[in-house]
Image (cartoon, rainbow, N blue to C red):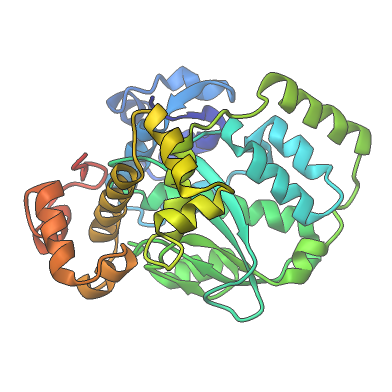
Length: 346
């Protein structure tokens, strides 16, 4: 099923395009998005179309930091009812847990998670943001606008107590890193395994200002009543777990099953009932991550093989020939030759 996203995620798109001297309506129609849909925050748009739109818009306007500029015109209200529940949570940690639980309301193709140890900054926590768009290679601009939005949200919730230590980009950006450093006000690291914000623990303990407990209760009850549990299939849960652990000691079937709180045989039984298997899902996740890393980063192939959990580069090369009909170097070369937003081998 095609993942959708609320039209509020494109808030400010038309203004930005016109400011850059481009026609937003023509670009929207090119990617089969009705211009009038942007007038309704709750309208649902295909996430893949939005991803293509943002990549192509950055290329057409020759604006490498298009995603950051779009994020600069947005605020926490793009999340609709989820934003109300977040703004009235008692602490920043509670607000982000609410976002993690209900972000599927904005788009099931997006997820937020908090990890207790940062790989970039000793003593910091990682607030990780992930996009799930199977088969889509180019995600730079969409990831930029989403990370920018998350940054603005935490900044609003924590106030002066927001201590951002570093930012991780899961791609090699087209814009200079100094543009990102200006936006985030913190060191920025490109071509990382995951995108996210690395934040001092004290930020999560901050109280959110001007909390209305009754409004939060109503917002959470509304979300629970109208959306409830996203009803993720076991296959979706396993895919998300693999995206977080692939290339680590926790990326095997036994470790993933433990992460999901079940025995490996139970996990496999649930997957079989959904006509899937752990091996098929791991293969699909490896393929998707390989495509993104090859098309959006300059990570050396030997290092990339390890990130994907392959024992040797030769194993990775054989996998690429199986997936794409060509070796990894050719996939990367082809991506450089294609127009932004068009590099889709899925």
